[in-house]
Image 1 (cartoon, rainbow, N blue to C red):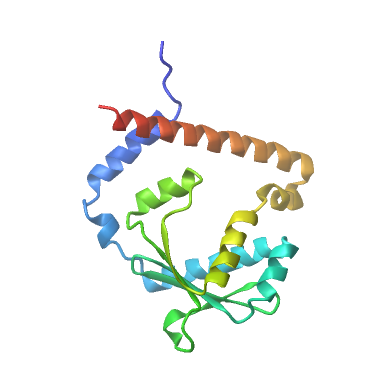
Image 2: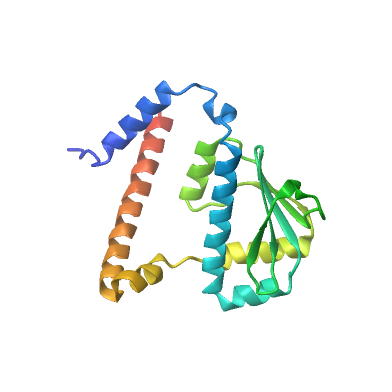
Length: 190
């Protein structure tokens, strides 16, 4: 007897939502400029928070002081430079000044496919333009620097509750990943 996933309502809700949205929504939707700017500022804060807990990463980035990296996806552009402290500083791409030393263009136009790739733990296809050594440093950061949410949570609630919450969260994420893989496999099968 096959058991039904406890998250079957999620798939039904996603199908219902997708049916109600215009077919060209992913291609036609452009968020307001202020929202994009706010999200980019929060991304920089998050990156710096993670980098401050990784001394080796900060040391590597100190050698890249002043170098600029630009990440492009569809019509969105995120540009940053590395500071003397080994952290990241947001730069407005249209503010003029020097061109980025490294440009990373995400090839996947669909936000759904991009999210699926990232949630599966894979790297999206990216076209790299510019400095190869800087690209190697950025790739090292992507491969070696990880955020430890349990450590941050422990500062708020203590070690034991943080460990319990983190383990529960990992189980939920694993269950969701498994469910999504099963749903994708079921839809792919004729």
